[in-house]
Image 1 (cartoon, helix red, strand yellow):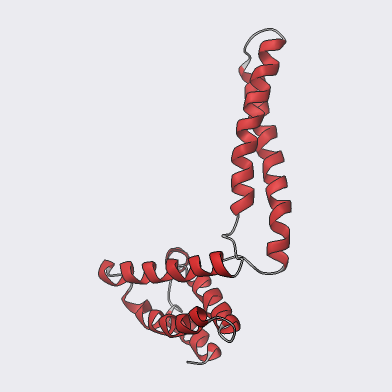
Image 2 (cartoon, one colour; image 1 turned 135 degrees about the horizontal axis):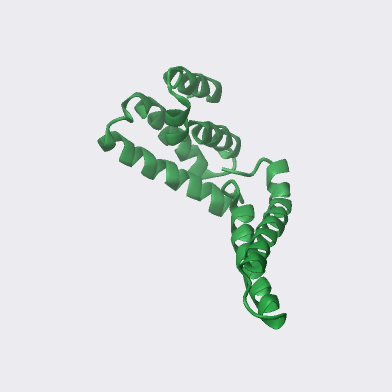
Length: 156
């Protein structure tokens, strides 16, 4: 099926969805998978096969309230997304900012704890300040690393 027709079909099937249902079913990611599969289908055999799978997945959208339909849909969705991550260099949204934020919190907390003990015993305020500073620093470092992926639209 043509990419434009498939995207129009997804939009018509999801027209009455609430925002939470739209996000729960990852419709925006499905649209991105359709676009990227069409883009890479000439170079990648798996992407050409995924176009057929995605066309079938689109037709499952009205039945996704039933768990029996949703489990195979999610399995196929994750399989296609994993292919893009491994073979085409895509990353999940907020991958680096989340990871670096966690590392920043841990490093900031550890640094603040060490500084607190060196300068007169444990102080919870220094401990919390270190965690916040680490969180902010980690988030900005991770976001800077994600910037090239965002600019090249390599996030799914």
